[in-house]
Image (cartoon, rainbow over all chains, first blue to last red; front, side, top):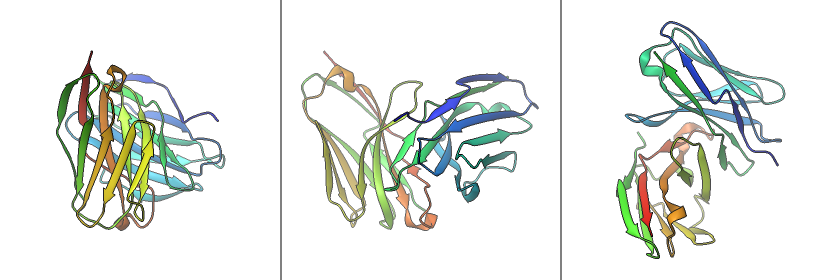
Length: 111
Length: 115
């Protein structure tokens, strides 16, 4: 079974731009969660989607948004990028036993 | 508010040693606890998942225990190898998350096993 995939793997953007990241969960997994990882804050939960509905959200500004499609693939969008948004963005899909499986991440650099 | 702490922050050992990594959490109301491994610049690899009703889980040279009442978990690595060098992360799924898949992570233990 293929693992969680994320595209693109690396991105460089400038301040003020927006960015869209994509995540494809493990086949059959309906829950997709997003996390931000930075050296200073560690791993922080962004939001979770299940059956195309956001059902949990972390403490991030409204510039961070996401969606999920009927095939469970998910996208997250960050608008008006700031330098502090530079991070590794990780996506995870959850099995029926709620074990979470992570993708390789997207490394976003904002200059 | 659930907080997860991992001790030590870093560990350097010679190959062959048995290791214990510690994780503590402030609120015992959790659904499960999961241990991950992260290699530099990479995603997380799930090592072990312990449901709240379980006391321990084993996989190969790894054994994880859970004591919910005291808010502690330990990851035991037997006969460490250089390939075990990585950051080990502990995460809990708190009940206050409403049963949804939100994990609260510790800062990790950075392990280096030298030949």
